[in-house]
Image (cartoon, rainbow, N blue to C red):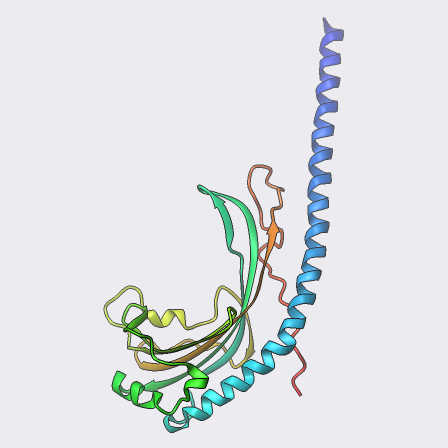
Length: 238
């Protein structure tokens, strides 16, 4: 009987070694694949940023010039945002994606919605688009005054943002860099919630890539990039 038990223990130990070995092999392969995918995404984003950043800077300069009647903007920055949306089944994550965009924000303090609407007349339609067909809100009490889309990847919006009221949610919170970002120009300053603002925001999508899963936790799908996005290299400013 003791010989039988020893044989069972040997078999179990051998099976455990195989399971652990397979676990390590699969996850090491996943780590290598993630490193390669990061390199590919970095290369692709570098190429996209080489044209997107200079174009965004030119557009933002045109926006500042159009709003010169309001003086220098109190908030002005250009930022690259990257996030990790997921594909889910119920409450379980099935896979991760990396999505990146470039956002240029220019904002002036204004005394009222009427002042914002009057100032908008100085902005050419070719730059910021035209008023929506009906009143359009970008959040609680945030009024979209104009919108323009270029293809499927670039959108410019002009909005009037009133001071924060008694609401828990203030629509001005949407006009700030996202969770994972880097500032390209400016300091990423948020809007002062005690003031009213005329905000021009231009956003360009830089692409979304499927990352799959890492399974170091066995049961759950982990982010192969560990919540640190591939961001590419910024072009050298001439």
